[in-house]
Length: 108
Ligand SMILES: [Zn+2]
Ligand SMILES: [Zn+2]
Image 1 (cartoon, protein in one colour):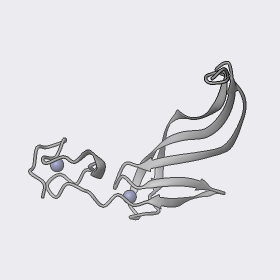
Image 2: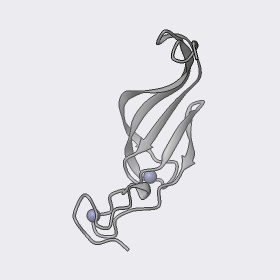
Image 3: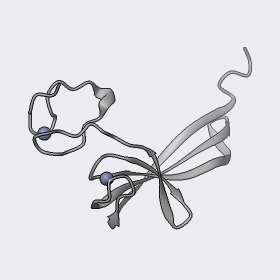
Image 4: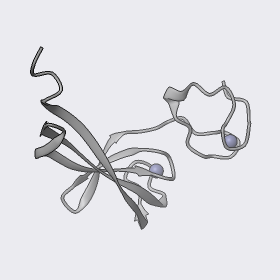
């Protein structure tokens, strides 16, 4: 097919650093967020032509909740409930860890 690879739609995200001294909307902790900008874009010959669906997302350090910028505040997209019972740090539930990657505490 002639057109394959010449144009297409892709998804990209950019690291925007951290935001300090914020209150987590998911668990109420005083924490900091890891900010990301995400967007979809249309490209021709791998050159982005336009972007849409631009949104700012963040991950809370306290509980690992995924957030999306909503006006002046943040909306909770997903709560991460996997928190190590020993050290209290967030653990990615999709990674399937059997031991805490931070402190090696065994997980159920
Ligand atoms: Zn939190
Ligand atoms: Zn731990």
